[in-house]
Amino acid sequence: MELFYRQTGETGELLIILHGLYGSGDNWMSIARTLSEDFQVYLVDQRNHGRSPHSVDMDYDLMAGDLLEFFNKHQIKKANIIGHSMGGKTAMWFATKHPEKVKKLIVVDVAPGTYDSSSPNVKTHKKIISALRSTDPSKAKNRKELDKEFSKYIPNIQLRMFLLKNIERQDDSSYRWRINIDSIEKNIGNIMGGIPDTSVTIKVPTLFFKGGQSKYITEKDLPVIKNIFPDSEVMTIPDAGHWLHASQPKVFVEKALGFLKNPKTDYS
Image 1: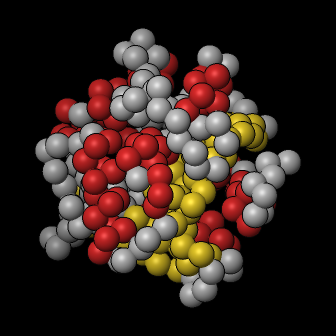
Image 2: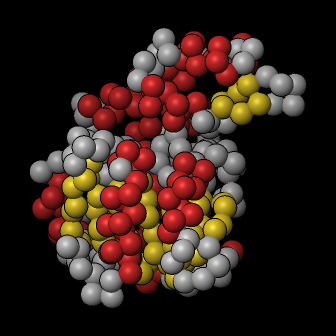
């Protein structure tokens, strides 16, 4: 699948950013502009998100394949990758299959394993999907009215504003969801899945970011991370949740640059 992307930065090493579930490359633009002072940054929309094509099928094997197609189309031999949540899983899966194409990897607030149905993270996503299903954007006359309707299901304003970025206006001036809700709902089990082989060793310098208030990376995940990624470190950003790059952008950029630009991969 040919993915939509935006590019910023003219010089430096290549850096690919993969957004999380319900997101798009646009969510990372402000951070990408800062990083583009040192890197050529590609902001990629994953399948069923942003301006990339829709598909009934969605799993990490397919999304890693989409990324490989992106590498080939743009004649990229090797690049640094930042992946948040779902994008982090795609990046990890890609690194298991094509480690020679990954210079350094940054995984943002997601563990390599599978989140089972009892996980609070899975329950949260099911509530979000239900909220998306319950809100028909085409019936709203304007964004204010749409926000009011959506607030019945998503009271948290930060989360609501993030999700409403998936609204687009059609030619007849009505609104619609840009993301493929049908496919996301159908494949949520795949999206919550883990990398294919947790016994594999990926010798790629890797930095995991964990939000101090997030439960996506737990203590039980730490030895698994170290076994799969022996050249890795987990860095916690205090006072940050799952979208830590949005709540603590300065800290995130500072630590990410420290990792990416340090030839010795010093995590301190």
